[in-house]
Amino acid sequence: MSFINKLKGKAKKLKNEIIAISLAFNDKRTPLFTKIIIGLTISYALSPIDLIPDFIPIIGYLDDLIILPLMITLSIKLIPSEVMIDCRMRSQNESKLNKKIGLISAIFIILIWIGLLGLIIFKIF
Image 1 (tube, rainbow, N blue to C red):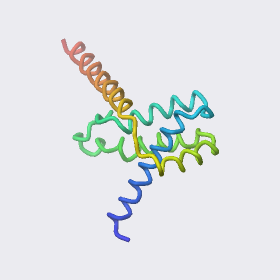
Image 2 (tube, rainbow, N blue to C red; image 1 turned 90 degrees about the vertical axis):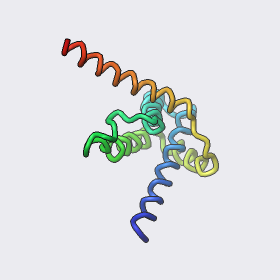
Image 3 (cartoon, one colour; image 1 turned 90 degrees about the horizontal axis):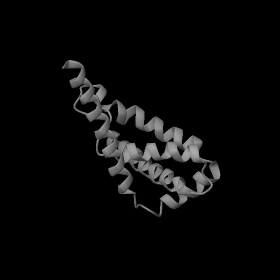
């Protein structure tokens, strides 16, 4: 199996896991704290804007390669196992993602960057 095929397989699995944890977010059996972590994870995964912009050499891709998988892993570990099993089965049948969460997270990331830029400008002048 070529490297590209392995990468495609991992990407598909990651997509299914994101769908499964988004389904767990709406499940009544999922604890509130876990829902908060899942909400942050899904928001960050669907956001078109990264916390660390990709154009920054080397560290620009750290969020995609390290932070996001860690957030997904943490979310999965916090979800009760019976809920995760149900959601994984449902995720194979449902491919609809909540784009509204992605928009909200994009706005949140933009506000963080505006705040940081404002702080820098304030400190300079």
